[in-house]
Image (cartoon, rainbow, N blue to C red):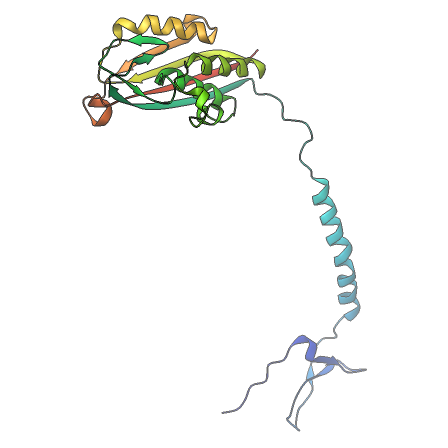
Length: 233
């Protein structure tokens, strides 16, 4: 079977005064010249010479694109969502929104286990782009053991005002099978408004059962969702 030679551009040499070039290497004594258009080595050289300054210019342009030294302008509105869930255990107090709710079970937690206030705090922190409540008030810190959750709320509100925002409105949903919260909703909402330094017209509170489904519906846990809208002062 005849062998096939593979030739590369570096193996192509230009004859001194002809358009013919000889393909090298070759062991064939009858090797012949093949006609090609004249290679414009001057153009190739100029292209290679132009590559460096162009590349340098490109790098220079990339280096000139820097991150802004000042923070971006503040947003007129910020939205945050909070969620919390706690296990219910017999013999513990049930505190919701800072109000002690009569029940045979309460939230198992490092602090007082106020699922609503924890949820609201997380919603405010989220709207501000800050770490969640567990990072700012870690349950590994003994000083928060059994702490009143209103402490967390006041700190979240302080951070909100410090950032230049105030509450636009808040919508919260509590999910628990028992007890019924209808008799306590207004007391919970009033305390929530006080902690938020907000008018009652911008604070909404709803309560839902879980239709006896999973731990929430079996009175083994309690959960809350909160959405807040913060407005630039």
